[in-house]
Image (cartoon, rainbow, N blue to C red; front, side, top):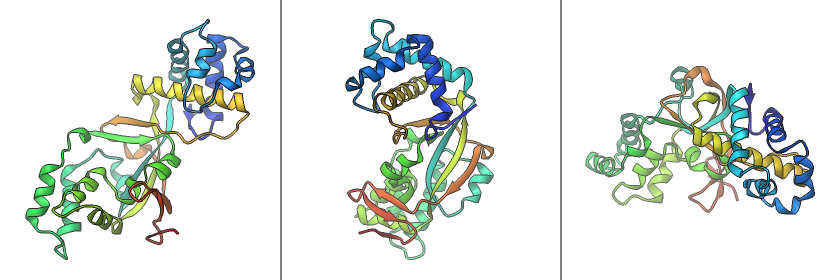
Length: 271
């Protein structure tokens, strides 16, 4: 069974089933009758407090986690990047950071052919930027809308490591980072990740998000699904057969420019 955050039909039945079994078949009506206690789409506390006499918050979330784990095989996910060649992803998959490859690209952008910076200046920037927290993991998000609206730096400037290198050049800063926009295209890959790859802590948090969204929709008669800030950390790579498709978003919020809209097709900011 595949679930997709943006398609609530794909997962909401599992939430309904788990909550009915754990806190009673009348839970939905109780939520509707206490709508004023459910103020936020991203917080399950108000919902769980309604049933504190029956089950603890931990028990409620755990019941949903178990239901998801029992029935879900894959989950829809998205990876944001900036690339000149999408075909390498379909050949090699979504790969963890390769420092040498990024350093070669860094050298290509800032040292060749115009010679914006010397080789020694390139090496200096590389020496001061750590890669410890970036080793052998691949990050994917469950909502591509959030990537475009809140994490646009991955799409506009590319790799976070490359981004950091650019601003650590001598005399570096916003103007050196802006050069990165001249290379590649903003790209979002759609993929299906095995649900078994989700860590226990991540699963607990995902169940919490789904409970909160489900309860808010019941309390306030909503049919849409909110933008979700949720990432899965995968150990190693995501194989190419897990990639379904890709697209190039044009209008992206730039967190480094007061969230101005960058139009990647026009290579300019919208007014």
